[in-house]
Image (cartoon, rainbow, N blue to C red):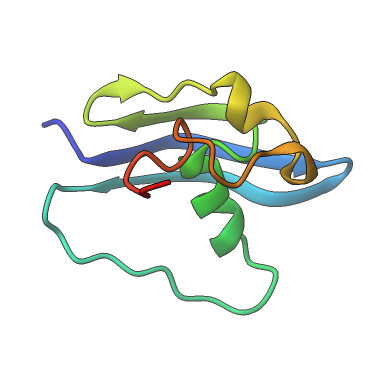
Length: 94
């Protein structure tokens, strides 16, 4: 089965801190999904991994069956991004 978003043993480390540790989930197209948990449990980090704002420390993320790829625009730190850059926000009119 192809999922809209699929995590396979995803991990994200910040030094010795495991923000996300071995997460495996599959979210179907059109499915309502929510992540609940206390502060610091990795919810935002998972979203940032999906968006490409963070690099995986381990595992894979598939979007509709294709492995996610970081673009050069997303690899730049937040302070270096141009807010109107259409590659990041193609749905926003200039």
